[in-house]
Image (cartoon, rainbow, N blue to C red; front, side):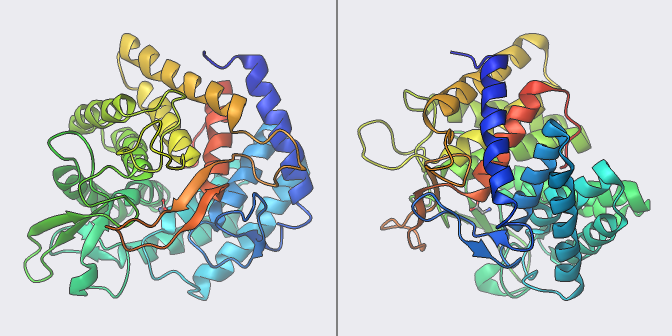
Length: 381
Ligand code: GLY
């Protein structure tokens, strides 16, 4: 079933009610990355995920025109400026996740100069993580350290901040580094069978590609569902900004692998290794990221392909509307149930976190998906 316009409106109306109720708790405070028993607790602006809360308010403002959302989002923008000026928890690559849906959005929608300033400082910060040996942005850890000399697939979503920074400043350096990182990612992250590595290591002395390793997936050679989804959306955004045709070729391969590994209700399990009957949890956030990526790439495909992927996004939205979207504030203060932040396996190094819970990026991309399905949206990325 494809979601209808009426159902999209119902989803928006439910989301706006919940977000309106959240304003009192989450304006000067942010949400934790994931809920506990489906309710978010308060947090300071310290994690890689806080930009999604602000991004939800921008999307809610676009839909409802309620200035309460605009005001709350701009209050949060000041917090992002303070965070980057004081270098609070910014020693990692997630500047795009933090600053695109919050500060770039504030500048695009309200010409907020603090948003522009904060986002440019964040782009400068990201640039400091570029490794000439290997030509990529090092995701985590001490710069140059052998045990962290790697990129991760999620970083493709951090790059639009750099394309934006070049547009705003005229300085080509941001864009050039983003293009280099994209080329390195495309050359190393997609396997022969069209699944993807989560992270990829390089030799810290020579920059030579070494090996793919998982962080949050089930095992090194499986396809972590959200990683594959970041790849799909990342390829669409990379094509948007570079027009490199390799992005389209890889998009078909990676998106079709995803489709071929979906369970009956089209919402993936946390790793694409699993299917119905395995008793593993779903990751609804991977579904919404994937759907947004398909809608973005559909803008650049021929009509038949565009309809195919757009219809998939509508089918996913219908499944989410039916069984995953929060319909009542008494159930949750989040928007989308049944996500997974991290699930421990015998082969990965993470501990269980946010398993079968809401997470802030799932909520944000759910709202982005509804927005994309309801109008020709000027993106924050
Ligand atoms: N970007 C980190 C995650 O998706 O969990």
